[in-house]
Image 1 (cartoon, rainbow, N blue to C red):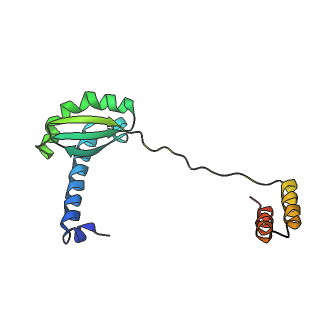
Image 2: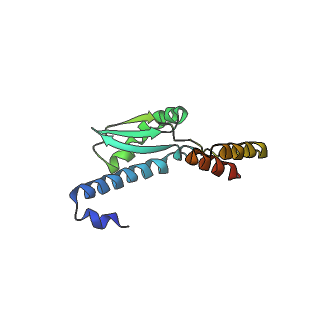
Length: 138
């Protein structure tokens, strides 16, 4: 999908696309100038009131960026002359791992569920749910 085409007809979308491209240029400039070991651990967030905000994924990277980035201010100002200083914020990257469910019923548990389903003939919905549960393999 080409968002630029839609941006031509929508001023707000066009503004967002221009702003995003600007931040991407700043991000690319920083990643080009900094050591490769840092590049995967930060991103440019925004430019707010003359301040470039950089988000680091951990405090160690943030410390290193705080030491190195002031020296890169002249290169950054070639891209955006309104930038006067740089702030580094820490926001850990999402590292939530997917939960893999490995629960299974033993044959004894399945038999108990089936017996319970047969005994609950006066509650057909509950009996059907127990029967369905007893038939599951995983």
